[in-house]
Image (cartoon, rainbow, N blue to C red; front, side):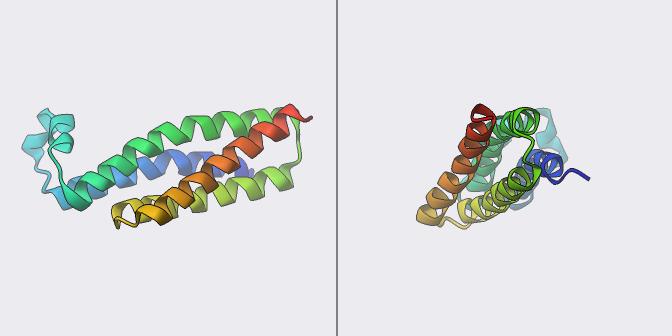
Length: 128
């Protein structure tokens, strides 16, 4: 099993989990399904932060996926790539929790950990 590819899969699941948290804590009803974006835009507090974590997750995941694909293709150092991918996923899980919990400084630090992992993977691809 390729750990890095599994991490890419997880990175695409995390925003969906955050969306579920936003909806559950925001009082989502089936009637809101007609206009789900309008419902999510009306949220406040923890629910709004969960939705923001979802949106940021959708922004981070494609960059991470591209970095993994390029690093695996050009570098081939699966051990380093796997470790970096695991760190990325852990940072994104903690980032989402910090965002939802309103720990802004921690969230920012974790954002840079995850972004740094993505940049490092691009570096691995470029330095091959």
